[in-house]
Length: 356
Image (cartoon, rainbow, N blue to C red; front, top):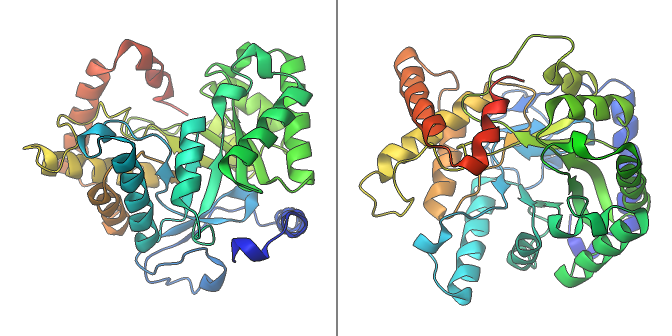
């Protein structure tokens, strides 16, 4: 689908069709493994690559790659210095993602929106773009009313040269239960407007507050089509009908997992290709991705990737045997215990996501 040939009106139409498909029972998350043994219609999978696995992103019915590109680029200074080199790095990473069949980018900040919009120029037909300009969203008091959020979104689209985004997921306070009901009402009203006007094909939020997310999904299932939450290699599923995992499945919500590498605390090296721990860290990254993908409710983990080698590495993880053997599990557990012990103070909240 070429960006130049798609209008907002067509996206509004397609969103209605997708919702109708969900209403007639398309509720189970399913995957298309490398080689496509299920014989799914690959012509409808954006940027399909038979070496990649694709998962249905809830009732959006988008088939997204089993690993996607998170917006953050921590430690990118090890490979890119200066603005020109940074832009070159982001363009190269996006190009390698496209080559490997990765088809979704999640941009969370204004800087990320601008960087990835530029990196995607001329090839929006290869990747879905998730959008949040969190500096001008409800984390801040100046951006908590309907008119303010509309202004922020329109301004962000204009600055980034975008007519639409595939997903607008508003970034709430990490503990979103701190938002009062009036603020949440404004968020939901704005998401409705964005979708009905064709500015966003699909809508959702990000939050780190499990119980509040569950409450919001149950109350605003129509607007909250996709949720971004933490999900690390320590996260475990709780078989509880009253829990978040059950609610995500029941309401067929697309689920992206942030911080799969525990904000890089999983690793001991600095991510540079010449690091003596480069190979060891790559193996840990693949084990973490394999572990997370054992949960069929997850559409995809979305790690920030700073080099083309890291893109290759996570793509390889998708192709490897999914279940960890006892030795691999023990190695990952030891690494995550070390990561938990070394978490910076401002990431201690990740420990609240050991169970979902």
